Amino acid sequence: MFIIIYNKHMHKFNPADHKRLDSEERHKLMPPEALVNEIEKTAYEYFKKENAVAFADIGCGSGFFSIPLAKRAQNFKDKKFIMFALDISEEMLGVFNGNLKKAHDIDLAESGSCMIKCVKCEEFFIPLEDSSVNILLLANVFHEIAGKSDYLKEIKRVLKDGGTFFILDWKKEDPHPVFGPPQAERVSTEEAEKAVEESGFKDIKILPLYSSSFTLVSKK
Image 1 (spheres, rainbow, N blue to C red):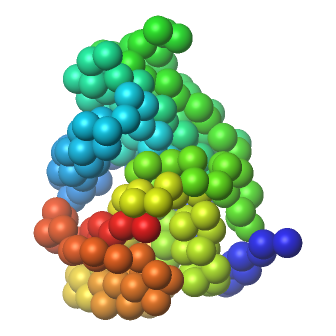
Image 2 (spheres, rainbow, N blue to C red):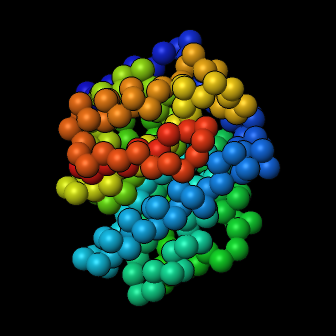
Image 3 (spheres, rainbow, N blue to C red):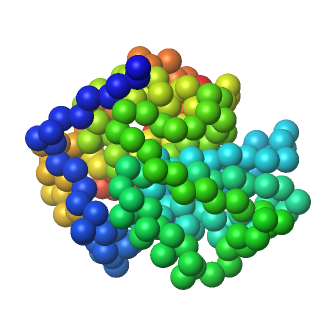
């Protein structure tokens, strides 16, 4: 059985604080459009060869990144964009669905360009099939995982060959953090890059999107 061990003493986000996820403060610090632009460009690359592209947001939370991305799906004309929104918290999936219903410019019809599937995941595995996802996002979750190498293997399992992995997290090297977990529980850009490289990902790049967070993009 594939098991990921989490540190019980590690800071983990409390779903009761979900309003902070969509706060004006966070939008100023981490405007989602910057990362969404990169994911959209990546999706277009896959659409050159495929009519359907699958995207997974692990730890989707309130939909801070996924909902703006779903709005972009209307640009994928005559294509199908399949989005898996995953979270270990039923409460957060409820918040995601509530925000989705309030959002505009998302065609959720069966014949529409965007198909969104909310999935309750566990802490020890990602409930998606092998090689089922073109693009995977792990945003502000990596610092919470104690068994990082095992978790990265699980991410590789669900990614298709040539799939793209985005990892975004709070910088440990940020001298004055104003949002996110305590500095002692963060991961440095160098540590994250090393973990991704040692797990067999290739073409690793650092995207300069946010001053308070690092963004790594790599390929399976």
